[in-house]
Each structure stands twice: as structure tokens, then as C-alpha cells.
Length: 356
Image (cartoon, rainbow, N blue to C red):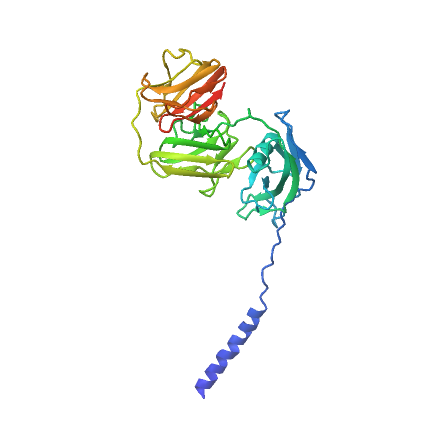
């Protein structure tokens, strides 16, 4: 009888607890709403006549269920691509975003619209909260974009960070990445890196536009007014090939297995150079990586090549004027008169001329 009363007592004690648990209120579900482009242009016609031309996007306010600062980013991609190759065109913490026309033009061409022609592009707003919440992407809108041909507007990219020659000084003759002559959004740099982080800058002396990565596999950018991305990371000191492709927003950092020896000197030679075809004009050798050479020189209309140790046994040439990958005994490089900062890499023969 005592055992039966004990079980009954426990049952009487537990029943109120069970009923109480059933009455507990569930936490409310906080609804979130993305931002959208409130007044999209009916069409974007880019002319390239004004370097400061901008396209203005007005966006609605995103709602994350609480008050916080939000950064709004205008993104663009090919229709039907699901923004898998989205280009971040511009950002702001306000509801008005100004995007440089040159930026839309360059990214639209790299995504399939032929220069000087018209085609559709999808645009959307990505809202990034200041708190640890997931970003929200708004519904895309399709806008007709007319591009222009601008063969002169070539971007240059420079290395900065503890893994590179100039550390975090953003205006100290930082080594330039070598731009592909066929794809103006593709850059390659083969050379020595220290262990640590680095970023890519578009303009020396300015911290934006600034490029890095936030996920270790894709390129992130602060074009101005947004948050700076994290660094590209070099795991150990050594020679690597860094491939930086803005057309796909991807990068890679691959170790170089066999590193050739350095040359005592490398110079420019040819009818366009100060000494003509009679003698090389010596380039400066980067102390941090002696495969990298540079010079500022006034060139005449004509041709030029790179050669090692004042002799024709090792020389590099290619048929592209502004940038390229020189090969042994390759063609003479065509030159139009001007003053240029010239970079050359004896590891892979790549060269770049930046008009001064």
C-alpha cells in the first residue's frame, strides 16, 4: 500500500508541471524584408564622354527587425545567372547609391555585352547589416545597358601588405600586377611573397578601390564607402603565382615548383628606347624579389625588347604594346611615344607599361 501511495504522490506532483510546460509561449518570429531598387532607370546608356559620369540608384530600406546600420550594395550580373558572378558596382549606407558609369561599362562588357552595343543586365540590392545577421538580397530587375568602347581606360593593380615588397605602405613604388593583353580584367603576378596577408589596390596612394577576400575563394572589394575586405593569405614564404580575375571575381595562389636563377641585369633596348638598338638601358632590380625589374623611361615611336646581361642570348619580346608575356626571341614590342613606368618579370617574361 505504501508503494502505491508513493507513485500516486509523484504523479500528482508532475501533472501540474506538464500542464505548465504546455502553456509556455514560443518566441515570436521576427520577419525580415530585403531592400529593392525603388526607381530603376528604364535604360542605361553609357557614352564614356564624362569620366565622372554616375548612374543613380534609389533603393528601399531593408528591415532586419531591429534598428542598425545597413550597407546597401548594387549588384549586376547576366540575366538568368542567379547572380553567381555578381559584380559589386557601388555601395552606400544611405538609400541613394551612385555608381560610376565606367564601372558599369567595364563589368557589362566582361559579362557579355559587346562594347558599343546594347543588351540586358540584371540588377539587385544586397543589404548587409552591421550586426551578425545574414545579408538580404532583393528581387532583381532587368535593365537595358548600352556600352561604349574604351580601349584606353585600362586599370592597373598594385600589391600592398606584409607579404609583399612594400609592406602596408600604399604609395611606395608598389609592384604592379601584370595585366593580360586579351582580358583586361585578368591579372597575373608570379614572384616571391612573405608569409602573411596582402591586398590589391587600384590607385597608389589611395585605399579604395581595395580588393581582398572574405571567404578565401572569391574576390571581395570596397569600391569606396563600404567595408574593407579581408586579406589574401600567404601560408608560408616562397614563390607563388597569384591569378586575379575580376571578370569572374575569383583568384588563386599557387606555389611555383622550379624557380630560375636571377640575372645580373635586365634592360630595355630598341628604336623606341634612349640608346636605340646599340645598347640596353638598365632597369632597376627589386631587392625583395630580384626577378622583378622596373624603370621610368621616355620612349619614342618605334619598337623595343627586354634582354638580360647586355647580350642577345636571353631576350624577350611579344606583339602586344601595353602589356604582354614576352618569349625568348619573340617579336619586337610596338611602342607609341610617351613616358612610361615599365615593369618586367624575368620569371615568366610578363611586362606592363603604365603611362605617366
